[in-house]
Image 1 (cartoon, helix red, strand yellow):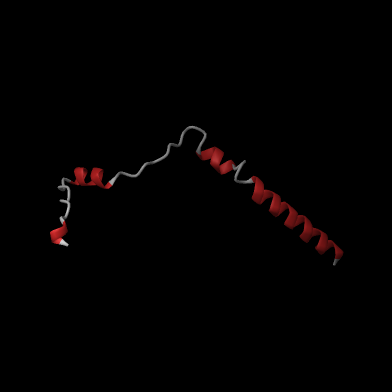
Image 2 (image 1 turned 135 degrees about the vertical axis):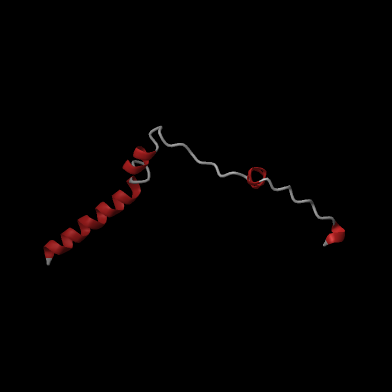
Length: 65
C-alpha cells in the first residue's frame, strides 16, 4: 500500500510540473511553428462578396426599419 501512495504522489507532482511546462516548451508547437507555418487570416465579408461577384448590401435608412 505504501508503494502505491508514493507512486500516486510522484505521478501527481509530475503531472503538475508538465502542465506548467508544456505551454512554454511544447514540442508540437516547435515542430509546427519553426518557420514553416504561417498564420492564416480569414477573408473579410467584403472580400468574399467581391470574389463571389455579389454586390455590396445597401445601408438601410431609418424609414425602412
